[in-house]
Every structure is written in structure tokens, then in C-alpha cells.
Image (cartoon, rainbow, N blue to C red; front, top):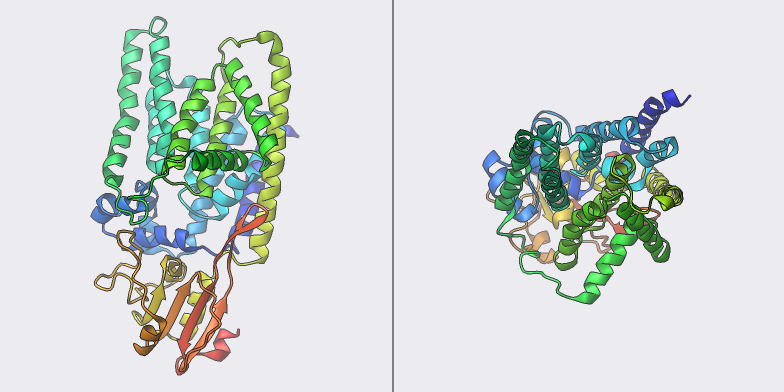
Length: 471
């Protein structure tokens, strides 16, 4: 029966993700990437927008063709494709017991946050698990290993940060093996590691100087804030219960020390945590710390190095397996809770807003939109609906270089737009000559609601199609 488990797990993952993703309403973050790929010039995508987006351009480059020629619905299938490949690599090549192989694909970050929510993070599991599968053969296949690290570097800024540990340990391991490996192998590996290093330098060139209006000057040199970030990171990675999560981290650290991979784990998470503490992070970024933990566990189970304190190894192996089962128990529950909530509720109101605008035959460039969150509706239209966003240009994506210019509602009403879209607002005030429609959306996070994603739309009475809007 276990011979069928890998294929059955991958198939179940794909079908369940398709089921939940099929009703998931993409929110503004998903829309932003699609709009950049659709509307931006290649030059802007590579050399202008990263200063505001603070991320490299891999995801946007991958979306250029589908955003140009396919409907917005294609986004969910793209994320599903890459996540399913990552799950396949994990279940077929990881060294874990079969229960771990079956459970991890349905964990919160892998299943819901990095698959159902279709963002660049769908690349994380595939690249991280491929690195795990390649790790023991990295000296034999240095180019393939280096390309995988380069992909992690270029997938996301936090991906670049955790890659520093992989690159540093690769060079250190080559130094340690200099008497065992032939000189030509050493030089070949060093030449290949130049690939992710070069990609990392390009990422620095793309992102710096930071021109994001809120992050360019925001720094947190505060021990209280740093401790808060560490606690949040600990809980999001493991169980959500500080004492239990800390216990699992300490057991993991001892196991990693025994298996001689503690330095690898430390150097991968330290740059991530440093930037998160002093500059910026979001909760969904912390899923990468979960994947790093899984990756180092993968390496620790496969490494052929002699263990420290070998007499304790049978006991610590049982302890670390118990930790893995506990963590996956929490994560599978969180994935189920978030998926159930998303299936039965609204993650975003972008699709509903687009529908009511289309049914009322609202004209192109005749909609006033307030805030970044209004973008959730825009990819459902071929043209640019929001006349006040980038008014001198044809692109619809949001730029973060300047502060939002928010006009008074009375001024907006006086200009008589066909419709007004207010993202992240739930207003109950009516205005003469306009019909008000309220929509609700929620950012589901584990077994809670993290943020409200509500939206209020005002449509001119002479344009509003009441019958169609009620269907």
C-alpha cells in the first residue's frame, strides 16, 4: 500500500487545493503581481518597480505570458502547478517516515498560504525541497545545486536572506573537504557557487536604494521589538504556544548539533530574523522559516557524517520525530481551518466588486478608487478602470514611491465618477445620486481572521443595474 502513497498524496493535494482555490477570491497582493506582469514594461519590471516592491522580479517575469494572454483565473492554476511539483519532490525524495510525507503537504503554509493564496511563495516549497533532494550530491552536481540556490535568491528577498546560509556553508564545506576532494572538483564547485552570488548582487542592484515610501526610513533598533519578532517567528513556525514552540526549538537545536547541521540552520535563519527585527516582515513570510526547519531536518536525516553523542542518538531521533508530528498536527489543523473558512466565506471582495461594476456597464477610466486594496477588482477588466491611480499612464498596478493622495469624499462625489471603490472600508453613509453596495472579505490566518478585507462601492443611480446586481 505504501507504494501508492506518494502518488495518492500528490493527487489528494492537487484535488483539495483545486477545490479550495477554485472558490478563493484573490486579494490585492495577488492582483498587484498580475497587474505588474500585464502592464509594466520589461525595463520597469526589472529596474524601477523592485525599488518599491522590495523584491526581485522572478514571479512577475513568470506571469508575463499568462497575464498577457490568459484570464485572471489562470493565476490559481499556476500556483497550484508549482506547489504540486514541490509536494511531489517532497513525498518521493525526502527521508522522512511515511506519516510525515503524507501530512506535510497539507500543512498551513504549504497548502493554504503558499498554494490557495497564489503568490510568489508558491515557488518556495519546490525550490527548498529540490535543494533538500540535491544536498547530499551537491559536490557531484554543483551547477544544478547552485542554480537551485539562485532560484531561491531570486524568488523573494527573504529567500535571498536564507540563501546566505546555504552559500556560506557550501563554501565552508568545500574548505573542510579540500584534502579529500580533487582540486578540479573544488574549483568547479567554487565556479558554480558564483551563480547564486551573482544573482544576489543583481537583487541588491534591483532593490536598493529602497524607495518604498514607508519602509525607506523605518528602522527598529529596539530590543523589545526584536524579542516580539522572535516570539512571533517561533510561534508561527511551530505551534502557536510559546512554551511548546520553544521546547521544540531547543530539541531541534540539540538534534541539529548532534547531526552537525546546527550551523547551517543558524546561518539560514539569522539573516531573516535580523531583517525582520530591524526592518520589516509580514506573517506570511514566516512560512519560509518553517520550510527551512524542514529542509535542515531533511539534511540531518540523510547526512552521512558521524554524530556527536552517538549513544543518545536513538532517543533524540524519537524526540525529534515527536516534535515533527506535534508541529504538523498544529499546521494541518490550521490549514483545514483556514481552508474551511475560505471555502465558505470571502477572502477578498475583489471579484464581487468587479461583477457589480460589469453588470452596471461602468465605463473604462470612469471609476475612482481609494487605496491599494481596491486593486483586487482590477485584473477582472482588460483595461484601466481607475482613473485616479497613475492618471498619466496606462498601467493599473500600484506604485509605492509616494504617499497616497486621498481626496475628500465630497470632492470625489462632486466630480461625478461612474463609481467609487473604497478598499478596506465598510461605510454606511449614503450620498445623493449614488447607490451604495457593501462587500465583506476576511484574511483568514490559521484558525482566526487576521484582517478585514471589506469594501464599499458607490455607483451612480442612473447606471446601477439593480436586477443584475442581485443575481
